[in-house]
Image 1 (cartoon, rainbow, N blue to C red):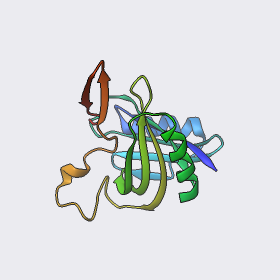
Image 2 (tube, helix red, strand yellow):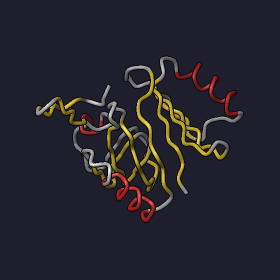
Image 3 (cartoon, rainbow, N blue to C red):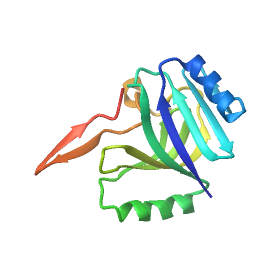
Length: 157
């Protein structure tokens, strides 16, 4: 089963948590000082917000899958898009460890397809990393084509 994932950068986390908790009629399933997530069944969505210095608004969209087989099926779909595909295995993103694939749609909106493996206690903390800046952002840098020129554009804060 697949679940839609939406991540929004917000200006005021407390106000946004109050707003979305009332809208969804439930409290967040994950609540941190800079992040909240609602893992909803109706509608079936993984909705996350964060206040970490990113531009306010849509951060990225995604599809969360239940297992490695579904992730493999999604990779096949993404391969058929003929878009730049970024693969991350066992990566730390937000408060989770996941296997994932990233692509950008034609308008440059980042799409994350992922299978969550575990939770982690610190935002983007990777045990193998010695430099916190290695894990400063979930959305990877994308390559934007302008004619024959390829340019790196940051998806980060």
